[in-house]
Amino acid sequence: MSPSSSLNRRQFLQTTAFALGAVAAGHAEPAPALPRWPIIGFSKPFSDFSPDDTADLVAEIGWAGIECPVRAKATHIAPERVEEDLPKMVEALRARGKEVTMVTTDILRADPLAEKILKTLAKLGIRKYRLGFAHYPPDRPIPDIVREFGAALKDLSALSRELGLQGGYQNHSGADYIGAPIWDLWLMMKELDPAAMGFCFDIGQAMIEGGLSWPVQARLTQKQWVAVYLKDFYWEKDAAKGWQPRWCPLGEGRVPRQFFDDLKASSFAGPISQHHEHLKTGLPRAELLAALKQDYSTLRSWLA
Figure 1 (tube, rainbow, N blue to C red):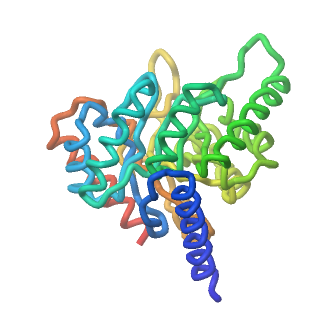
Figure 2 (figure 1 turned 180 degrees about the vertical axis):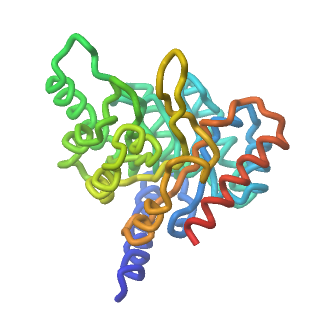
């Protein structure tokens, strides 16, 4: 059996097992497994769209679905209304053959609101979610924070496994972000089951923080990837702040084609989520659609 056929068989068995478990637990049956690398869009730039307008946009672009923010800020759905509003988004997308493939949250620990959100995902058949961002306080020893956040990830991993979900933490650039160095997050996750907790690997953020070392970071974490996040950037010198990363359309910045060559040679078969930090919420629909289609077309050509 070839590696690809083995992978497809494993995906089928995992999806079937999850579906049976969900039915037994009284949950809605999840949608069928998507093909390798389903391309989805992070709905942050059009978070002011209704479920029907969102679904129409996704269908027009050609994405398989969306990564939907359910968080306090820059959100599509308020966390407190997840039980009422997320089913409407799922219904609108599925009516057009699309999915809410994953949900972005503020979750950092297993508290009552987190349980409410995650149980709603399980009932709707949405298997993947992204955690919130955590930071290193300047007045506390870093090893203490690593131990404490590692323990929180362990608890969330157990809850995710119980519900048949897979959580992912996004590596982000910034002076005090947990996960920016990537090694720190890997140390916290290395003993966890990647089927319950792993990385949302952001190649753009990894390049900002890691420069030329991104291939090592990608190799280190690849078996723990929940999703790949994609956006592009270049360095620009600001008169006041010095050199700063500036987000740009895919293909106009520093994200290399080599990443996609390596991706094709890897065993990763999850979603690729297009992020569009260069776009603001509230753009005219035609302008927004053209920009999203351009990035989608570029990505498809790189994966061909």
